Length: 194
Image (cartoon, rainbow, N blue to C red; front, top):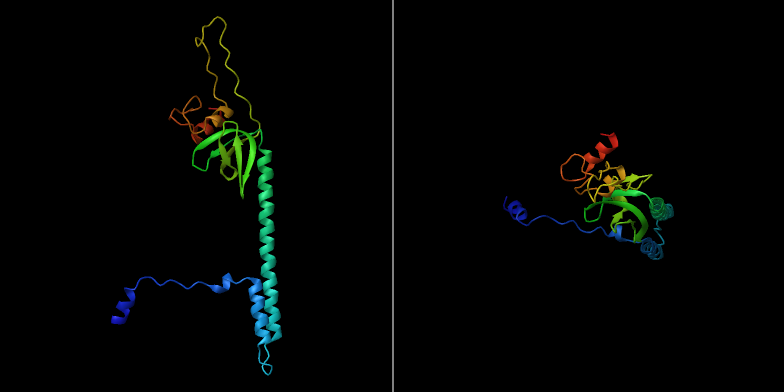
């Protein structure tokens, strides 16, 4: 029992790194050729096993290249999708978890990341877009009634879908349920017409 107690107090056992996973195909081929050149001529290695291993390596390399090509296609598709959003009103979360909305003015790429540049200066990662208004309509201007002084008798227009998105996450005229924030509940109320 003392051996078990001593081992139990030693802490967790860390697994050794798997060197096979770190081995490149070039290194593997060098090992194979070294093995072939140093083999015993009276006990040669099985050539069919060697061919099977080489075919496996080629298959793995082919799969890795296919995966890389597919990632490139997905990236180009995201870039094209982002380009199609220019001029449309969107809303979502920034990389800093700020809820923002606005009209897409341009698209930016940084490495493998694609982001939308909004008209109000916010940068919205394409993966964080939560809402897209396909036909953004500007909020109509408020025209004061004739003969009324500045601010007197000025009607307050009802919030539009676009104004809800523009003020997404902030209190204000688009806060339809009065909870102090423009959120999904306000958007649902606006879209339901109530």
